[in-house]
Length: 95
Image (cartoon, rainbow, N blue to C red):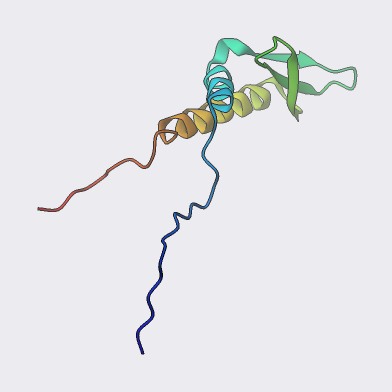
């Protein structure tokens, strides 16, 4: 028995980012758009500046070093997202 499908579909695991999302990722991937504030309980909170120049809180850490490491991790994460925003990266081709 043969099955014939009249149409094809393109399936992706995640939706493609729009231009506003990419602009936010560019901003979050830049360390100058981050800051660390100390809260009344002694914890350190990391914040980034969004597209409307509002500070958005992200994480809380017990130490300043932990907060800065969290920012560095976020920058790495969003830099990778930007790298793949234009599609998959070719790592090997065959002749």
